[in-house]
Length: 219
Ligand code: E4P
Image (cartoon, rainbow, N blue to C red; front, side):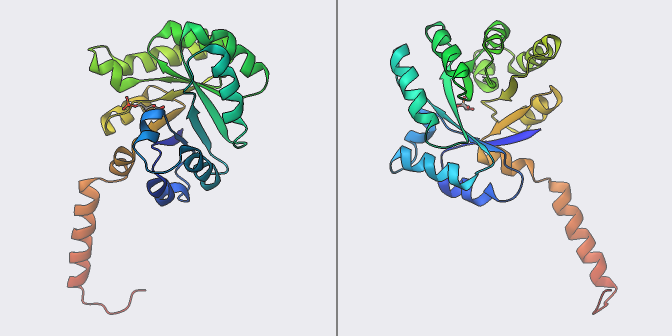
């Protein structure tokens, strides 16, 4: 299973990029708006930090033709870009054309099984269902991940299931069990998922007990 970081913060990405745990980064206009500096420079920097990773960058244009042109320009930033396009009927034609041209597409703002099916039929490389935002409106985000997994497998689609809008480690654990190909994690969730209080407690106990032996060299 792949792990992406859900942030546009260069320092945080830098901190984890070389650990071997991070397979990519997802950005969106909101995440980029939280950072200082030029978004293009930030994106280019992130692409260089993770040359083997996949970096998702979202279109900001609205009209389909403008989205098409912008998607091509974003894709030209780097070999490892996935262009994020919202799952909206306005863009189906554009999405199909971009995929046919060989541009890697990540369909964002996916909220239903039928939306996911339509995008897989177009040949999208990634679909991004938003777990947390579905929970926010009283729907079941995790259940959608299970349903999408079944639909993709049943039909033999190669589209990768990218679980997004992950709010905590419980979400993360549930999307692992639901068979998501990728989880994109806010950095605090990623960091929290590396820790457990019993690991800390166990290490402390082992260290204390070892001291009792009063051995100066081992082995
Ligand atoms: C990632 O692709 C999404 O943009 C992101 O996970 C959205 O998460 P949010 O619902 O917490 O904003």
